[in-house]
Length: 417
Image (cartoon, rainbow, N blue to C red):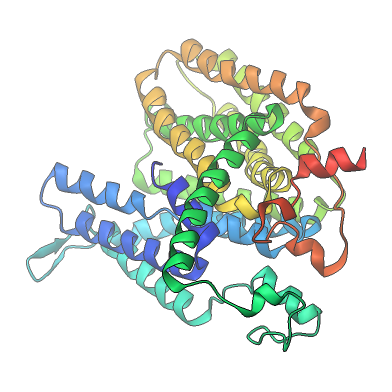
C-alpha cells in the first residue's frame, strides 16, 4: 500500500520493463522468505516484502498509455479477466499442494509452505517472459520525429537557433538538470493531488475502496457461512471459488461484447444496483437465520458476484479516461492505496462482526450510500470528453515531456465548452 504510489511515480519517469522486473524480483524474495519461514514473524516479513513488489498499478498505467480511449475498457476487461483466470487456476492447485510432504534441503514442503514455493516458480517464469517478450513503447518524442520524417536517433543537420549550436559547461548543465528534475517531480505530485481533489475523481477513489472493502468482507464471511450452515471443508470451498471465478469470466465476456455501446458510468450504475440489492437481501435473510436454504445462499452471493465485474472494469477504465495520461503511474499507485485499504479493512470487519449481520451490513451500506450520493452529484462529469486531436497523435497527447504541452480531461472539457 505504501510503496504503490512511489513505484507508480517511478514508472512515469523510467522504463516500465525495468520496474516490472524489479517488482517481480522483490516478490520472489518475499515468497522465498515465506516459504523458508520458521516462525510467525518471518511469515509476516515475507508478506511485507512481497507486498512491496506490488506492480498492478504499473501494469494498469502501461495499458492506459498504449491504448486509445475507445479501446481502453475492452483492454482492461481482458486484463482483469486474466486475473480472474488466475483465481480459477489457484483453487485447482490447492488440490495438488494439499498432498505435498517432502523436503528441499533443510526446508520442508508442506501444504502451508508450498504456496510460497509455487509463487516463486510462477514469478521466475514471469520475469523470463518480461525479459524476453516485453517491449517498452517508444517515447512520444521519438514518434513525433518519425512522423516528421526524422530518424529517432539522429539530429537535424542545422538549427535555426544559434544558441543551440553551443552547449553549456558540463557541470552547469548537470546541476541545472538536477534542479529542474526536482522541481518537475514536485510539480508532478502537486498536479496529481490537485487532480484527485475534484469531486468526480474522489468519487472514483471512494468507489474503488467500497468495491474492495465489500468484496473482501464477503469473501471472509462466505467460508464462515458455508461452515456454519453446510459444514463445507476446503475442497468444497475451493470448488465454490472456481465456480465464482468462472462466472466472473463469463460476465467479463459479456461486458467485452457490449462495452462499445455502453458508457463506463452506466456500467457502474449496474454494479451499484446489484450490490445494494445484495446487502438489502442479506440484511433480511441472515440476521435470524437458523437454517439457510441453498437457493437463498446462491441468490445472496449471485447478486453480488454479478455486480462485481461491472465495478471492477468500469472504475479503473473511467479513472484512466478522466485523469492525465502522463501521470498514470502515480495516479494508479494512489488508486492502489484505496484497493489495499479495502483489502485490509474488509477481512477485519467481516471477521469481527460475524453473527451480528445487522451491524455488519449496516456499516457496509453506509459508504455505499455515500458513494451513491457522490455518484449522482458528479454523474455529468463521469464521462470523458472527446479528444482534441485525432489519429495517431491522440495516443500520445499526454506523453510530452513539457507539462504545459499536455491537456487534462478537464481542460479538454473546458475548451470544448
